[in-house]
Length: 59
Image (cartoon, rainbow, N blue to C red; front, side):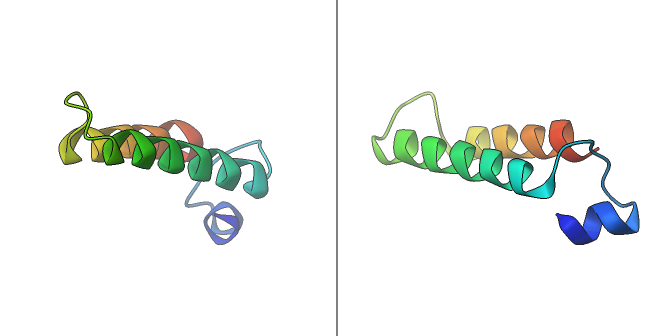
């Protein structure tokens, strides 16, 4: 994240550490839901949510 922000590949006014912690929280939460075998969260949905978060946070 830091390298992407420094090179201009990513854009955010937030500190890289804050972004990283939000990614960690999202992925851990989704992983827990996925582990419970929730019908509404398949691999495609998991990827869609993570990709959306990346787009919202860094682009």
